[in-house]
Image (cartoon, rainbow, N blue to C red; front, side, top):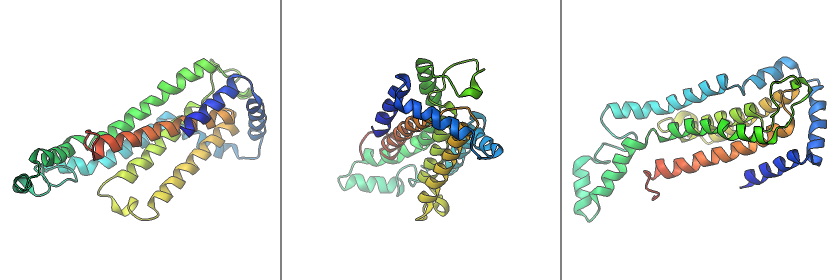
Length: 252
C-alpha cells in the first residue's frame, strides 16, 4: 500500500507539473552534468536492459528448480519425503488409522509433486507484468525525456521501463535464492538475506543513477518504477506463500 500511495503521489506530481516535477528536472539536469564517470554510469544503465536482466532471472529460476527436478526424477515429492508422505504408504496408513486423514497426508505430499514449479513460473509471470503495467502508464502520462532523448521516437518516459526491469528481475533473483530449498550454504546463513538485499539495493541504485547520469530518464521516472516494482515483488511473495507453502488450498 505504501508503494502504491507513493506511486500515485509521483504520478500526480508529474502529470500536473507540480513542484516535485520542477525539482526533479532540476536535479536530473544537475546529475547528468555531474562528475560520475560516463562508462561506469553506462554499465549500470545497461543492467536494466531486458537482454541482461532476463537471462539472469531465468538462470536463477533454473538453479532453484534443479533439486525439485532431480527429486521428481527419483520418483518422490521434492523436499517433502516420498510420494506417499514422509513415511511412505505405511506411514500414511498409520496416520489414517490414528484418526488422521490419509487424504490430507497425500494432499500435502502430492501437492509437493505439483507445486514445486510454482515459484519459478510465478517469477516469469511477474516479469511479464512489467511491460504490461509500465507501457500503458508511459502512454497515458506522455512525459518528455531529458534533453538527450529529445530526438526519441516517442514521448513517454514515466515510469522507467529499464529501472522497473532491473528492480523486478534482480529482486526476484534474490527472493528465489532466499526461498530455495536444499541450498543452506548460501541463503541459510544468518547474513545471507542481508547480503542479498544489500546487493540488490546497490545494483538498482546503480541502475537508477546510470539512467539519470546518461540522460535517459528523470529521477522521478526511476523512483516511480521502484514503487511499482515493490508492488509486483510483494504480489509474488504473497502468491508463493499461498500456492506453494500451503499447496494452493489457502490453508496452512
